[in-house]
Length: 80
Figure (cartoon, rainbow, N blue to C red):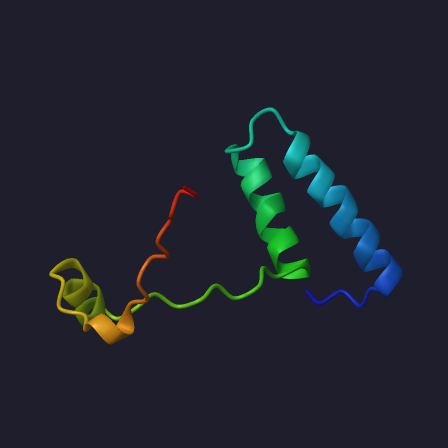
């Protein structure tokens, strides 16, 4: 089923579904999950940044990243 909604109708539906999902006492109920899925189709979330590759993370954990890759922390000097 494909609905052809105007921009105004889509915005109204997004507002109402958002309010229902936010204010429902049982936010993990099957009913709210279905409504949240519908809302996600009407208003997709922005893409999240991808995670760093596993090898890069392991190198960082083991301290194998070169000194040039990491900026030194600014030093704090007390006026004296």
